[in-house]
Image (cartoon, rainbow over all chains, first blue to last red; front, top):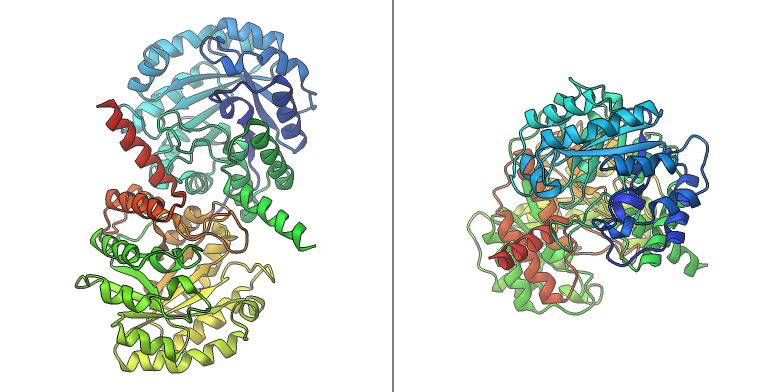
Length: 307
Length: 307
C-alpha cells in the first residue's frame, strides 16, 4: 500500500457549495469565505461561476467576488464558464482557471443541460481554445462518472469516452465526479484504474459526494489508485438536489482529517478550516454537516468550559 | 485487492446505541427494535445489558427485553455483563453471548471503570469461565484501540497485550474498538495487521465510530486486512459522550450500502434496515444520522410524491 506523499485539495465551497443556497449570500460573505480559505493554505479555490443569473441567481455576483478578493500569489482561483459569454466574464475577472463540464451519462446531459454529451463538448470547444490562447488553465468536470440519477449504471466506457473528448479540448485537469454519491470503493477503483490508462494520473481529480456516506472510503480507494487531487467543500456546503435533505459534497474538514491521519500532506491548516466552516454555517444559517468539523468544534467548546 | 466474500454485521443499536439516551425508551420499543433487526437478517444483535441500573438506567429492563423478544433460530443475541451478577442475569435470560470489556488505554480504564487494565481482566476471569461452562459464547471488546480521549495515542503493543489477555480468557470473538472515532485507515491497518498475528483474523471484529467521519474509510481499510466482522448501529444510534453533539457509532445503513457496493455479502436487507432506522428515530425523537438512510428515505418520499 503506497499512498501519494502529498495531495492538492480543491476547495469548492464558495461555488459548488453555495450555488444551491436559496437565500442570497452577500458578496461580502462570499469574499470573506474565499479569502479565508486561500489564507488557510488551499492552492486552488473554486471561487465563482459565470453562468446566467436566470439559471443560478446565487452566483450573479461572480464579477464582484472576483474583484473583491485579495489575490494570493500562487493560488489558483477557478470559475465555472458554460459558454463564450461566461468565458469573457472570466477573462475580465482574471480567473486563473476555467471549469467546463460534461456528463458521463447521456440521460443526465439531456436533463441537466438539454443537449447530448457530444453537443456539450462541441459547445465547449471555442471556450477551451480561447482559454488556452489567453494562458488560462482549463479544468473539465465529468459528472455522473460513478452513476446517474436517471439511467442508473454508467459504463466505464462512457467515462473513458468523455475523458478523451475533454483531453482533446486541452484540459489541464479532469474531474471524475460522483455527482450523486452512489459510488463505492470497488467502482471508484475500477473507473480510476481505467481512466489513468488514457489520461495522466497526476492531472486527474476525484470529486466525491457523501450522500450515502461513502465519500471518504472512496477517497481512500482513490488514493490507493494514486490519485493526487481531491475536491471538498468546507462544512459540507452544498446539498444533494436529487434527494432533498440528503448530504452532498464531502466536507473538507473530514478530508483533511483523513489526510492528516494518513500522513499525506495537504498544505492546509485543519484548525483554520474548522473555524471557517463554523463561520460560513453561522453566516448562512445552515447546519454544519462536517463530522470532523462538528467534533472538533464540540471538543474546543468543552475544553473551554473545562477551564 | 481481495476482499472477504461475506461479512457478519453485528447490530449494536439496541444496546450500545440506546444506552446513552436520556429519555427512557419503553421496553416495547426495545423489543420491537430487536425483533425487526433479527428479521432483517442480522446474525447477531446486541440486545441488552446487565449492568447496575444505577450506572445505566436506560438498560434497566434487560431481562424484560430478553424475555419479550421472539427468538429466531440461529440468531445470536448478545448482552453486556460487567460482573458475576450480570452474568447470572444473562444466564437466566438465556443470552447466546456475553460481552466483557476492557480498554487498550490505561488512562481510559482508570477513568471509565475505575481500575487498571490488568484488574479489569482479572475481574472478568470468573465471568468468562462461567460462560464457557454454560456453553455461552464470550466476546471481548477492547475500547480505545486506535486512540484515547485522555492519553491520546495508544501504542499497538498495548492493544496486543489486551488481545492476548482476552484470548487467554477464552474469548470467541474480540472487538478492536475505536471508541472515539479518531482512527484513520493507516492506523487501522497497522493495528489490525499486528493483531491478526496473535489472534485468528476470522474471529476479530472492527467496531468503528464516525465521530470524525472516518468510519467507512476504516471499514474499507479493515476489509483490505481481511476482517470479516463489523459492528454498526441502525440510524447511527449512540452519540459520542466525549464530544456532545458529535456523531458516535457508524450507521448500519451506511455500512450495508458499502458492502452491497463492494459485492460483499451480509445476509441483511438494506431496505428493511432503512425502515427500522426511520422507526426507531421517530420512536425516540432523534435525528437519523445515517447518510444512506436519509438519502434512501428522501428518495422514497420523492418517488412517492412523483407518483
